[in-house]
Length: 144
Image 1 (cartoon, rainbow, N blue to C red):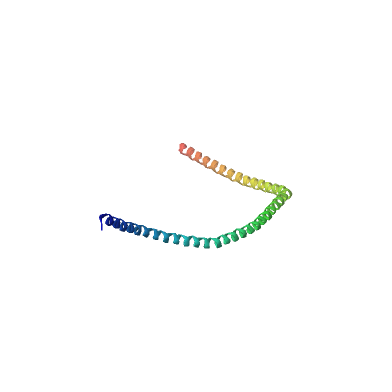
Image 2: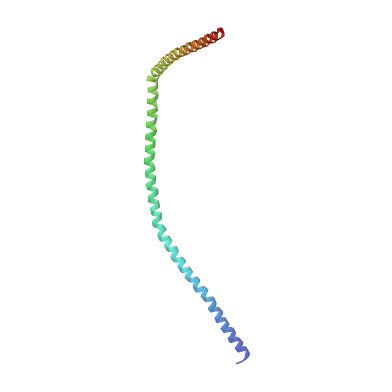
């Protein structure tokens, strides 16, 4: 064998080793692609029933919202009726009740002022008598 043939043989072996070293990562990359394909298939298999359930939930929620809207409109009507009834009650009975309340307040105030006036009168009389007694006591001390 000549030197050229040996060099060619070495180059061929080196090329086979290079192809072998490159084939291992490509083989592993193929496995990764297979796992990715299985994962995507599993996600799509799970997503379709989930989307179906979401659609059912949304339609049920919409029907419940229609019911809530009807209830809200009924409550609004009831509130306006109660407001009108309250206004009617205030117009019918409000004025006499206010007059009775004002009269009873005036009577209570007059009675409390009268009793307060009586108490103040007694206190003034008591203070006046104490002052007079104190003056009389001072006069008797000066006279002695």
